[in-house]
Image 1 (cartoon, rainbow, N blue to C red):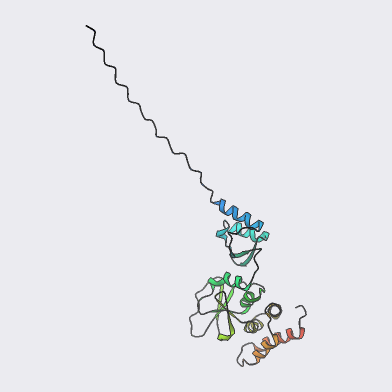
Image 2 (image 1 turned 90 degrees about the horizontal axis):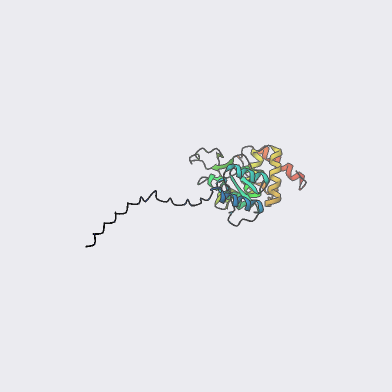
Length: 230
């Protein structure tokens, strides 16, 4: 008889070991998109950049300020700028401040001149509201005041109500220092076609206009200078 075959020992269980970890996916740096946009702005060729640019669109405030400093962006208002290649128009300036203009208010004075003709940008946006309405809520970039503005003394620019050149001229001649007023009025005349004589006649028809003498003097001085540089 042949001896019975001995049973083979069962194979020892093989430990599976630690599960292989998934290879980490390369993560895009959050700065990559901003870097591309910065490069595009600096080169002047970035079709993804809109007409208005804020700090959050270019990687933050330091990058925004650097782009303004180097001339890649033209500052419009506070944290709102436009690519240097984009013409700065009344529409663009109105869009830059649209969120600061409450309903039923009108951009007036030196702020209106800035919107209309690109004169010196004031530190605060001047908005006027009619008597009987509540004063707009406080905002660090806005200066509201109460006064009457007739409907035909306003124009609509990119959805923002702005005083007409004539009404703007009267406000500027009344409320600004003469030297500053003359510079702004000359800009309104040259860029917006302000008829200074018409503004002077309009002033004389406003019998209760506060500061009439000051405004009359400033307008008369501009008329006397004609188109000589201010």
